[in-house]
Image 1 (cartoon, rainbow, N blue to C red):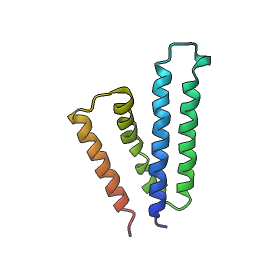
Image 2: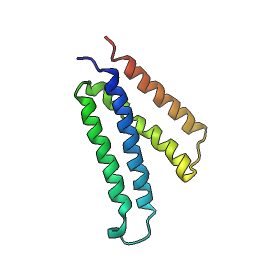
Image 3: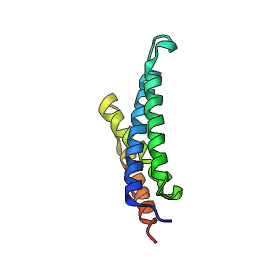
Image 4: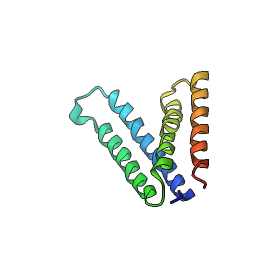
Length: 114
C-alpha cells in the first residue's frame, strides 16, 4: 500500500492543529490562578485531541511509517507559533535544526514512492 499525497497533506494539517494545542499548553503553564480555572489546559487538550483525530483519518489511506515522521512537523509549527506569539528567539542552531527536520521529512515523503 502506498501513501497518498492527500494523506500527507492531512497529516501536515493535523500537526498544525496539534501545535496550536501545544501553544495553549504553554499558556496553561504560565497561568497563575487555581488549576480548576485554567481553561488553557482544556483548550490545549481539545486542539491536541482534534489533531489526533485528523491523523486517524490520514492513516486510512497511508502508511504509518511515512505519516508518523511527517507528524514531526508539529515541532516546526510550534516553533514558528512560539516566535510569533511569545517572541521566542530563533537563532542559528534552531534554524539549522528546522532545516534538517524539513529535509528529513522530505526524504521520508520521497521514500513513499515505489
